[in-house]
Image 1 (cartoon, helix red, strand yellow):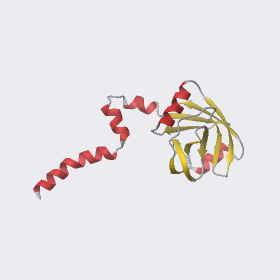
Image 2 (cartoon, helix red, strand yellow):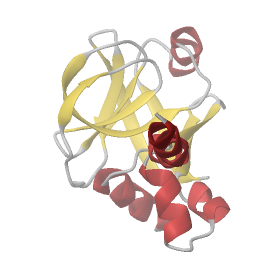
Image 3 (cartoon, one colour):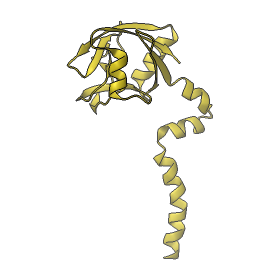
Image 4 (cartoon, one colour):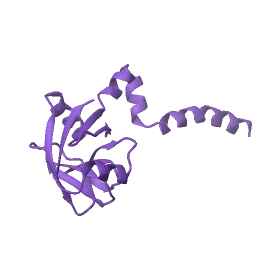
Length: 158
């Protein structure tokens, strides 16, 4: 019984670190600057009409490629409403795909077919590549900013 308690005391901190996910280990084990890493993982979406949203990028090669593209300059996308759940428009280039069975929610940024940028304001389930998530936004706020028809969105590094 005493040995079990000792083992549990040793395991709890290890399990807590593992529960924090890969982002914790990457920043610390590599000796990276955690604040610098966070800055490179956010982008801004400038919506036609003046609204600006900040999004945290996903941890995959698709989001890394998007950040590298934006490091060369802003990307402007003319987006159309599709199926009353999303705005979609061409990126003008192909990014690597990391498709996974995904259920979206308001604020999800998705790469579709490797070259279409999608902002979800409602839910959908399909095989998508997650690019990121707009922080602190709900369906109504997104709909208000994006409007009912076509909209131009400018992506930039934060």
